[in-house]
Length: 133
Image 1: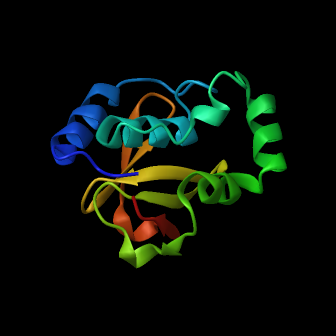
Image 2 (image 1 turned 60 degrees about the vertical axis):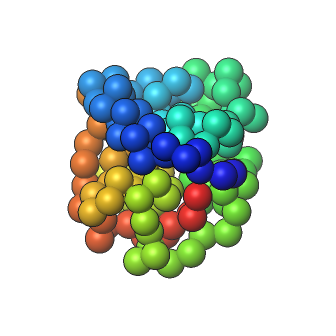
Image 3 (image 1 turned 135 degrees about the vertical axis):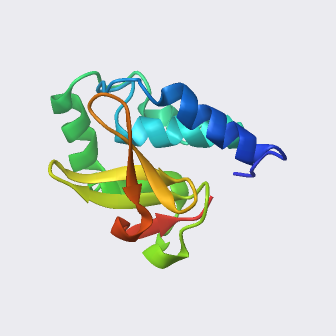
């Protein structure tokens, strides 16, 4: 995946547009939020294989189980992870949540993550792994 020339603006616009979009399995969950963001600033959809395949927590858990969890899904979509401190703007990060592992986007000195009612911003130091985009 190659970032488009105006990728910083596209990333900012994407996060702003999704700021108040509520969590929804198969539409606006952590994995598809990240894939949608990457598509916005690269033009490539790393989540195409999972779109329309699930619409419930049970369906999402089945996909995660069959693909090595959130870490496995991210590795399939983005390649091998690198250490969390290497995260830069536009990269994918893995974070712990009360519900388990989740994917989010690095937006500079913070992480944008899909929350129940919209985007939540977390400090970058909570990232456990990074995928360079």
